[in-house]
Length: 446
Ligand code: NDP
Ligand code: 2IT
Image 1: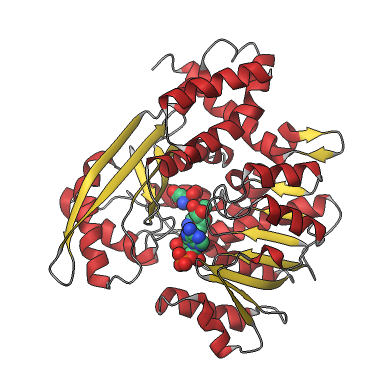
Image 2: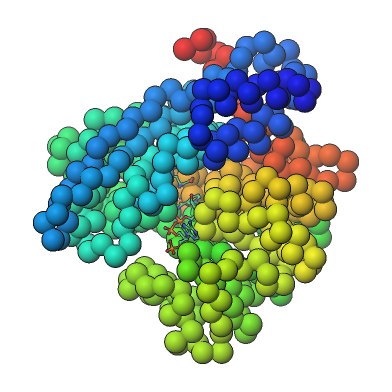
């Protein structure tokens, strides 16, 4: 078996040189899915995984724009259309200086499995740019978004490819891009998700990823006879996903001890409560300030510069910032300090070595493609509402989100049960794979 996996990865690597994040995501899937393929005659010999790792289409384009000093700036834009076997391409856009082909391909690849797990008809895609919105004025961000969409618009559409937000792309950026798309096409369609409520957005979409992570974690912990109430919770990030993961944790009685950004983390031993979280939201969403400002208002908390929060003892860890932010030594520290559950809000935040620590010690560990699928799931519900030309209430969307997270949890159990332990990595990868593979086989070699 090891040789089959090694040969497959060597072949993929040959075609995708210098793409470490993409190879990392493919390796994790290959290690769990290839043994399943080998045991199942319907998939064996169809080269199905090799077809899945090859994007259906990759678009890369120039984004030229003029900043407030009238300097001409040039960025690179991308859209990876990875797989459309079960629905139109669907996935977010990331604006961050670290964006490159490898990062977007790993995200688009994971999106195939995640979207399949949601039970909704969505294929996998991802896009973005190396543009850095930090420190840019609203008008600069608007000009960038307009230039970006002036090229992207020809590749997307409500039945073709439906982007949404991700790191650096929130409601402001979605608004500017939607406005430009509508102007270019002279059509009001649900071509992006994460839209404002008054112009086609869905209630609960901003909350969905963070809430979904906590719903998923609740299922994992309940299954082992424990709940969230009274648990110490360490969260990384302070953006969209982290904020709503914190909100739901607080609502369910957990004690949120940390939040972070790329400059360091804040540790509030008394717990970040509802009022303090409202302050974090104001700092990050309105003032666009650094998390370190938290201690100006709450001086009993401390700010630890340049570090990640994994050194703070907790029972539950929710990495909600970015890929590879939780390394082997962090995982070992978490386990030593009594952490019993890790639920990923971010995409691929744990390194492979960190994941081995979690699975070797048999602590509950949910990979992002399962636990953070609530965001794209509610994007799917936004698309459904747009098609119906109707809006569901908060309760209706939240109920559907909770059912979807419960179904994903069940799929992970169905495919990931190993004597006395649920291997959520294996469960998520195989459950996600089966639906897409079956559709690809039915549709022939295309
Ligand atoms: P935001 O842009 O709202 O927030 C990102 C947060 O992560 C910020 O606190 C940011 O800090 C921090 N961060 C980003 N890059 C780094 C880095 N290189 N090192 C340390 N910290 C970093 O993004 P989201 O909350 O939307 O996304 C967070 C994660 O969740 C990403 O992995 C994303 O792919 C994933 N995700 C998002 C979904 C969504 O619906 N938005 C859905 C599913 C997954 P700083 O401000 O200093 O950069
Ligand atoms: O990683 C993700 O699932 C997202 N950024 C959300 C994608 C979406 O289309 O809502």
